[in-house]
Amino acid sequence: MENKYKLILVEDDASLGYLLSEYLGMKGFSVTWTKNAQEALKKVETNAFDLAILDIMLPDMDGFELSQKIKTINPELPFLFLTARSLKIDVLKGFSMGAVDYLKKPIDEEELVVRINALLSRLVADVDTEPQETSFEIGNYTLNTESFELKHKGEGIKLTGKEFDLLTLLAMNINQLVTHKEILTTIWDKNDYFNKKSLNVFISHLRKHLSRDPRISIVNVNRRGFMLKVDEA
Image (cartoon, rainbow, N blue to C red):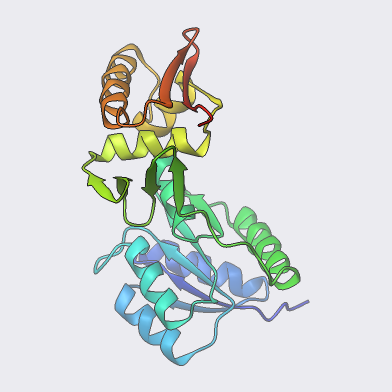
């Protein structure tokens, strides 16, 4: 039975794009396949879609940037990302930008169909979804995951990419233990001795960045991991 959902697929890989568009078409979806971001934006301007499926690595702009441009045209259009990148921090970034799902390549076509149907069924049933979390209050600090900024009472603090990713992960689990394994596989994509040494260095950097509020501490928990703690005022 045809479900008649209209999808836009943005995938520059000709083989994968053809395979996915044909398979989704066989499953009853109406699929518009484009190979670059500019073509996709034109399609979104002139057509109504139920879901956008965006590859991260595109020739003219990345999928993250494309998703934000699509939102300016149609703020209600949900989107999910496809990517060959394995870093879990990319998943966090994708969700912080409003993605409803994120699939890693190689794509399992049957899983993709199941996820699409589940997502669209949920979105249709729940039109009053909560807005995505885009900032975290850490004592007197604010960490914004859209602008990639850490501020203390309005004053910006420059963070490196790794520092930002690490602080975001800790802030998502504030006052809770985040294990060494979880941190290393998420931020460094590998849990080994050398990355663990590097992690300790970045924890020291974050402690200095957060030192303006004495209520904040990053605690080393019994060699198991770290906890970002904020004591009550």
